[in-house]
Length: 290
Image (cartoon, rainbow, N blue to C red; front, side):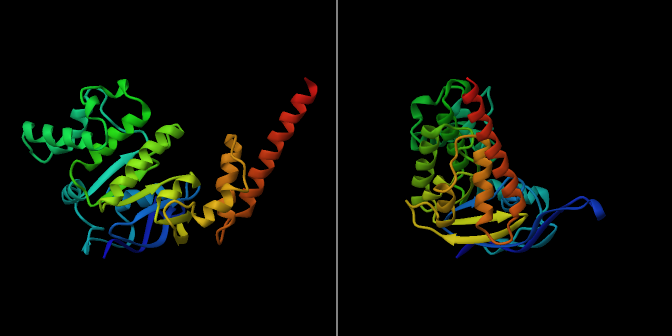
């Protein structure tokens, strides 16, 4: 049964000639228990899509059903309550409160539910134990590593037992070891039946997904089922054809990904490739002079 149903959803910012189309008639169905990755270049509408699905924003047009209930036009107080009880958010920048301990940060959503101090402390402690950080309950965010900090953020997202978890670049600020820690944890959470939707620029992380959605210019241009443990086919073509050692190379990788998708902009790809070649020539010229 679909937990998320978007039909012809569009999001516009501004008015008249100054209007910007962030989402262009997006239709997306997500079944309960799926692990969905969303990929695409910066500015393609990924964050706008996540904000609408997470009830942080409202679509300009179209319909949005969550658990067979129309939620597109919920009033802010009702949307906040539905969001609190149904959705867990994991952010790239963690968004932990620096003056609260790990335990207090995890327990914070339970405060807004009116739960007593004793109950929320026990529930938060159990959730930290689930992510392997019970021994860090009384540490402050500054005393934790990046991977541990993100695990605390995951525990906070899970403490209300949400049906849907939205993770916006959950490994964007982590090294490779921290990224593996977080993705393995999300994989374990998925195995318990949670539906997970995450944004990533890293093709390697599609190994954890059961499905990958590709976006470009505010629209979904490809939607493919994947096998857990394998890099998604479209992402694989990029991963093994474009080296990623510099910022320019990373951008070229994203552009190459778009080049494999319908209606991509080849001009952007060429300009990035030219920039990459110029960077390579400059490096070779510098080595020859020295």
